[in-house]
Length: 167
Image (cartoon, rainbow, N blue to C red):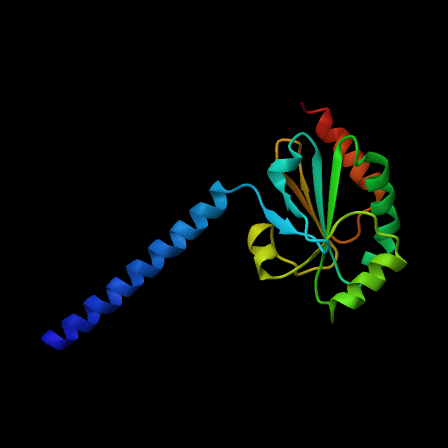
């Protein structure tokens, strides 16, 4: 009987410790509204460094037709607004190697920073279950939209314009 009680107490203790660590981890993620991403050139990007700008994080993959379709619009948006009010980060997932990514980026004339996606990125920003997926942060650094599927320059500009009118 004593052995049974010790096993039950041990299992209860393990459960409490697991629950506490999960709760602490979740609380830390909620407190840390920022992210730290390193692009393919080695430059670090944090959400907080772009305060005052709309930050768009676009998940994509080289095999994804809608991703291919949206790249010219994303390049046009970034090129026209990067020195004003928009920062765009592309996060590539499900790639074979970095050469494949570099060739794709070069072929598509992608002028915005590219991050190699992994579990650490999805822990900080969100899942990559659908390609493409775009996360939009307002100038205060708050996530205001998660858009799964294709985005266009017009969609993003309209979203930003409506968000600006709420100030």
